[in-house]
Image 1: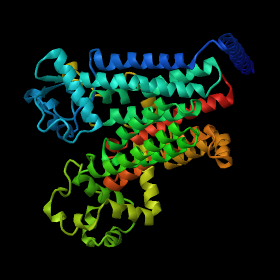
Image 2: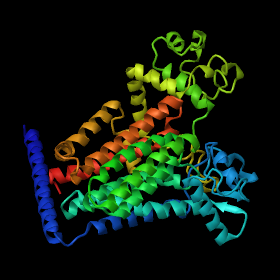
Image 3: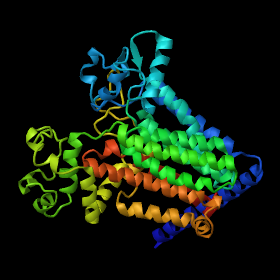
Length: 511
């Protein structure tokens, strides 16, 4: 009995202490907000977040041990035409195991403008910057990371500033700024900067597009933001042809901008921006490089269509393929010992020639349950963008092969271990977007010219850009290469979560 009374007293003491702490915290926050009311600037919040991201970026990429991403075998096709090659002494560092920082730098195999993309332009700039300082035949990947960093910091500033605009108090703004640093300076993002993957430019471009679009809510007919939106929209659309449809969504959103101001100069600029974005879609589809290979086509059928089929033989007959190929169901070209080499000439006639990405897309249109099941898998993959087979350390750092850095990995670890990774979460996220911006959606119905509807439309465009990335990946490579191809989907989800957090903080008024 005495023990029970003691436990009850202890519980009351703890509860009382927590209540006093909560009351003290609430009073302190209220006093701080009152003291800072009208004295703080969201621009300063954005600059502070940008400065912190810059500090973390420098620590990760420019202070030993240098962090980066190892080559998955795709670097050569990107860099060899630009005169950048693996050094002969790379040895076991060459693929997967370790981050390689230095490469042989020679004259480009083709002309400067041959196959020029946004990423190639930045690599050429980094190569020139390296030559300016070192004057040798060695290219240091950190020069490319430096250029990415110089682009990334203003993108973060713009995004955080627009997110902070959505809240009303000083403490809410500080929390939003810190949340931006936690999410977008995560090691899973920053280590991509020291690599030849296209992901850094995808990250920078989508953040610039989101920030610039949101800025147009407050600053009517601001041509600077429209230009930023258009340039990075085109860059994103033309990085690789799998991003072509992104330009279509950005162009549709651009149509909205035409109606936020009646000025002839503004409307002419918006129409030009929309036309350029739509043209970039066609250019990307026709000329942009592709990350999908013959192995991807193999996986699209065996690890996509057949993976979700209850009757593989019947499914194959829908494509005009002999049912005997059903033995390939669930197999992957990425297995250590694949059942059949995807390059096998026996597959060219009777298998590969019977389907293409358009026919697979039509199959999913006829079988939506299969598409939903594949999207469920894609959501799981999108919350883990750290490639299991790619190391972050140089061999000289003394770390094991394929070792991952845990520095500043709170957000990526939280996503991997705690966030629900199902299509149900995706649906909840979509419903949350509409509910959080319900007032704005009503204004869309009442009048399309209301600038206050822009946040909802931006969020929906980001959502569908991400989902389209997942669908294109499913159609072109099934579930076998999702980690390599779902980066845009992952960034889109992070943007939605981050911007929704700002709206939730404002609605709850807890800070």
